[in-house]
Image (cartoon, rainbow, N blue to C red; front, top):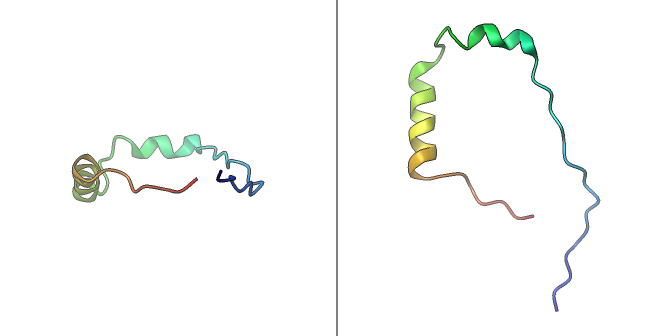
Length: 50
């Protein structure tokens, strides 16, 4: 039987600054965002060990 290792790490909660909402409609880095979305759709997210 394999025991799981308890590292005692707590999940990190990140709060998003509401001041960044003004950049949602500006379309900054449109090409990079489209490329990243394409890669996520075709390849997916990397596998992480728990």
